[in-house]
Amino acid sequence: MSGLNNWRQVFPLVNFVSRINETNVVDGVVLRAMSEYEWKYILETAGAAVDPFDTRACRHALVIDYEADRQAVDEPLDQAAIDRADGYVTALHLHHDGDVLAPVSLGHPLPIPENGPWMLRGRMSHKPLSQTTNYFFDSDDVAPVATLAAQLASPACMEEKRLQLAISRFESGYERNTAEDLLLDAFIGLETCLISDNSSELSYRLSLRGAALLAQHRRPECTRAELLAGYVARSKIVHEGADLRSIQSLRQFTKYAEAYKTNCGEDLTAATLPQRSHALLRETIREVLRRLLHRKLKEIENDIDDQISLALSQCQRAAHNG
Image 1 (tube, rainbow, N blue to C red):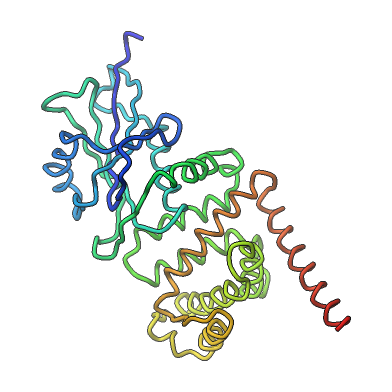
Image 2: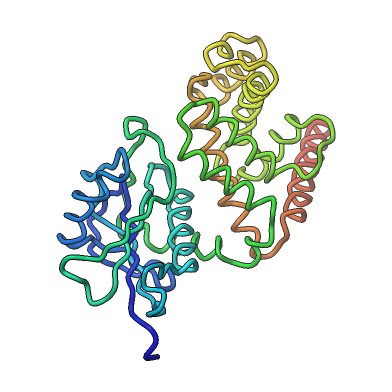
């Protein structure tokens, strides 16, 4: 092992608030409060390199130590380490809302040098901070996020190309600057998860399958109304270049908004559709990941259709007996 050198990669978490000092989160990845040395370096260097960079809610980082070839000390990146860190950020996003990001990575050899060299690399684009919200993380979140990270890294998830596209679109939502783009990303993800062909009645099948898939977590009539209203907006944006303000007064949208108000007791507005749709995609991906333990995505889709058929048959028998 004489040809190897210890190396540390630090992924500062922006918009992340936690009282946890240090915990192992996934294989080889530690979530911990940054040292004063690391934090000062971010203030002095990363703050100038990534604009904007919110150091007020950036006191924690994902940290990975690994072995780097001495001959490659100028570029000792471990792609597997970066993938694990990215996967954990995705798991954080899937666990609950909040715009936590890891926009840069900082690398240095071990033991930590007093004056560097540190290697700073920008890693992803992100929304202006005025459009973001903090992500709150405590000890009760550690286990469920670790479970999500393991599910995301599993062969069952990696082999499902449709699910990978849906996850990619979900993550893209954290980089979008317009509400219309966020809504389109969400619906591409939802359609990819729930519809495997391009036959007719897409909105009908999408709304029924989404409502059935999430029936254990939310009222089906509310889910269906949200998806139908969102699909109206999605179609108008894609085919007519509409914006959300013009969608609010559409007759089709108004019909679904009124149904939502009647069944769910709250207003459904076009302005809230992007965030609502992104949240629906989050819940859909989580539920699909849970079911992937035993089924392929296409089988999950068939199971949902069987569930819908059974529910309709039960309603028919109840109406007949009544």
